[in-house]
Length: 82
Image 1 (tube, helix red, strand yellow):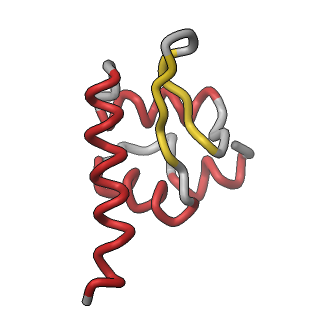
Image 2: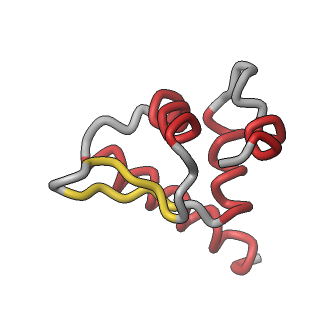
Image 3: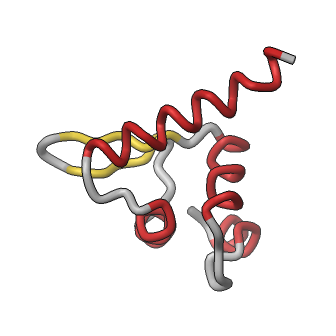
């Protein structure tokens, strides 16, 4: 993640869960959990952003990641249902 993206998201400022999820939806970023690497984001978001996302979204286990993935899928499909 480049400096412009970090400034756009405001990683140097306090973030809330809603702002992070909206940003992830906008860029179609999805968290994944692998047994050998743990938490990863696709597309790659960079080490600093990944750590901040993990802290804010409380992604510590595979179950946490699945919960956020479900939340992102529901949010992305919600406008098409209206």
